[in-house]
Amino acid sequence: MVEKRVMSGSEAIANAVKLCKPAVLPMYPITPSTLVPEKLSEYVANGELKAEMIYVESEHSAASALYGAYTAGVRSFTATASQGLALMYEILPIISGSRLPAVMMVANRALSAPLNIWNDHSDAMSAKDQGWIQLYCENAQEAFDTTLMAYRIAENEGVLLPVMVCVDGFVLTHMYEPVQIEDADKVSAFVGEYKPHNFLDTSNPKTFGAFAQPNTYFEFKEAQQKAMMNSLDIIKEMNVEFAKKFGRSYGNGLLELIDMKDAEYAIMVAGTTVGTAREVVDELRAKGKKVGIIKIKSIRPFPVDDLKNATRKLKGLGVIDRHISIGYEGPLCTDTRAVLAGEKVKISGFIAGLGGRDIDRTRIRDAFDLVMKGKEGKWLK
Image (tube, rainbow, N blue to C red; front, side, top):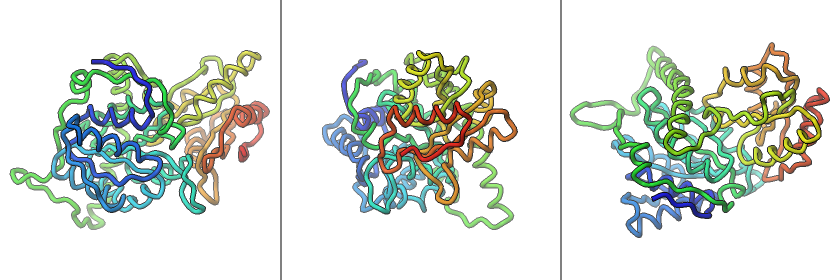
């Protein structure tokens, strides 16, 4: 039965996870991801979800148990944020390097110090090079939908890489809005039963955590890179398939182009800031300005060809980062400059929203103003 209810972004994700029927849930709650394990614990306790809830002693243990569940051959899930993701860091490349299709929700939150519990992208962006697919969501419905697609993407035989579903802490995790919860049978048909590829099986012995010397380690990383690049097409295919089955899509799954057909200037942004940017673009277009938005959903894999095609007619592009690589600039801007090197579009990088600082309409107007004047970006404080 399809049901539409007002709920938080966290509850939307928990509902999606429940419908995907994971067998093991290793959890260590950390603000602002706590609502997800709370709801999943409730589902397990009342019999809505048949799963083993493991109450671990740290986020490092949660990631380790996630690894263990997948090596045992069962679908699993966990959630974390900020210092929790940082504590998992040792295990992140182990899960990816073992080609385990895990799914994890990251409630994006600033890293300490100083201690801050509000939203920016410093946690996930700092981990973007560890072999996890990263998909960023604008609203609760997208978070629900992306969680369903994440399992299909991760478990695809041509991918077999873990996925982070990234949602802005508090701004999305605790925001209440209408969400359509899809029929359980329909979701089951879309997601399918888990068919493990790499797991401990006495009839087909495999080694996990092997010691790789220089004559083999290189090939393991090469295989991961090939799988990550394969995921570009798989993400697009899942977006199309999801749209056919449920009637919703998000651009091409990698990028969503908003008012870009005749745009001369645009900003690129990820997450909930896209919603505010939509309002600013409507205002500027009403004044005759040819502006648009490139909503980037997939940070890894980075949509190189799609970004090139989206910016061919632009005179200026502003890139808004909610994280700074201390000593240089925002990493999203760095990636964008690399992709568009030699192209005619002028790129302006902006740092905004650190530690939960509001990225309001005034700040986005300021960014557009600088981009349209051909000026370099700045800190949008």
